[in-house]
Amino acid sequence: MRILERLQRGLERLYRIDTRLAIHDFVVDDQARRSLGVPRAPREQLLVSQSDDDLELGVFVDDAVLDNLSRHDPGQALHEANFGDFLLALEGVSHFVYVAWCASAQRQVSALELELQAEIDKYVTCLIMLGAEPDRSDVLRRRLYREFSFEHDLDPDERDRYHAANANAHRYSASLERRYVHGKRIVDMLRELRRFYRMSLPAKLDFIAGAA
Image 1 (cartoon, rainbow, N blue to C red):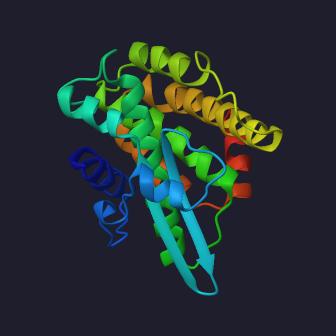
Image 2 (image 1 turned 90 degrees about the vertical axis):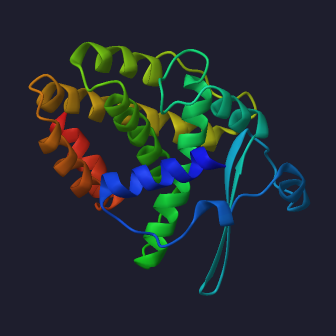
């Protein structure tokens, strides 16, 4: 559980937001998730239920993922033994933080926007943890956006959404690398990322297209 809390604090510090929520209060186990009758049961999942003005959230991260991250603490080092599970946990926390932040601002959020932000969060978080070096950025982008595969049980709409999020995050991360990482202008990059976080989805897509 501790890794999820650390990731939440890290993302909220990065984007200078405060959801005023504690993710551990929203974590559900596999039995609770099954009781909801969800159609898919991936290793990481944000569960959302909205009725009138009430929004209920649940975060599921597979116990094996959390156990592995406890044994191989990514805060000490990211490596082959923890990289994939770290990305899974980070994606779940990114979804939780973004939905909670949007809800507090009474702002609608689409599934594509959620996935796009998570893909960008993966790049930025890992880049900072790896030292924000240009050569590491290039390797990281390749691993995140080229050397991947989709889950076999995605329906066509889900596959299209993940593809769009991945492709746009790849273009944006390449732009960040070119404009900021190569010049070691990380503080300026973080300023832009905070502005980007607060944009609407159409504005984000336009910004990515212009920055590419």
